Length: 337
Ligand SMILES: N[C@@H](CCC(=O)N[C@@H](CS)C(=O)NCC(=O)O)C(=O)O
Image 1 (cartoon, rainbow, N blue to C red):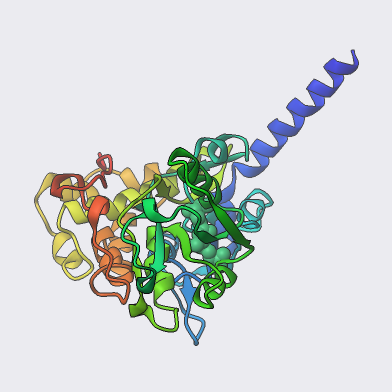
Image 2: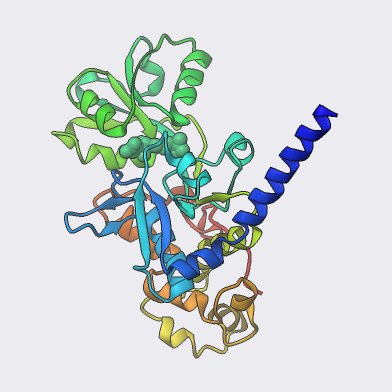
């Protein structure tokens, strides 16, 4: 009986939590701003400048959600979150979406009560070392000390890699990337490890960026993407399709520069995308021109990539896996139809 009562109570809590959270799109519309959990210290992904203007690939996804909802990419409040606090901030409702270089894993997708909506950047973990160390491969790092950040997928990957190759590991862990990078720069560790994208970003902060190299090995899969709470399918679907819209726009050669022309297109795929045919935006709880707003105010996926982390940015990261599926990469979005 007691067991039944507690099961019933748990069931009620779950039902209550789900119905209470199944309102995010409405709550965001009523509030007039999107609350976006972002990084805050990672160039290329999420970083405010001296004037407080946030930029980054992750930041652009939140701007695109705001563009689709409000026709205004600035109606976003960015909340800087540490690796450790990011999931609690989403669970508690402090943010509507978490867009902070967060790796999609099975445990995060299940036991945290959260759900990933897609992948905005296919990443993998790598290592950076001083050129003076004369090491060309991560396999030569046996006995090396490695600086690493807590609360990330990075720690376990590091231990697994050293174990698999019978190498002795000395980890030096830090609560934030800032501290880990500073310690590495000060010579407290032989190597620094994190997502490869993060290595490119953090290298720019070192005293002498040119004295360091990123080793060729990628030791893990780090698919990074937007996260929402479980139990709100409408919000999950809206956030998911905002990213898909950015990827589809690139595939259809629709850019922030030609979007006005494209709204006059007679191509059926383009017509469905820009909303001159069908009511696909309304079906998502958004407007007819939801995708036009995204591309006009933020750009397509490729534009955002190049501007933030690619050739038009200081990071100069190659598109690699993040090329579209029909250009040799694995970025792929289901069609609007
Ligand atoms: N993708 C990994 C790592 C994410 C992560 O937190 N990376 C570090 C290094 S690139 C970071 O963003 N640190 C910034 C900070 O803590 O301020 C994860 O989801 O656990």
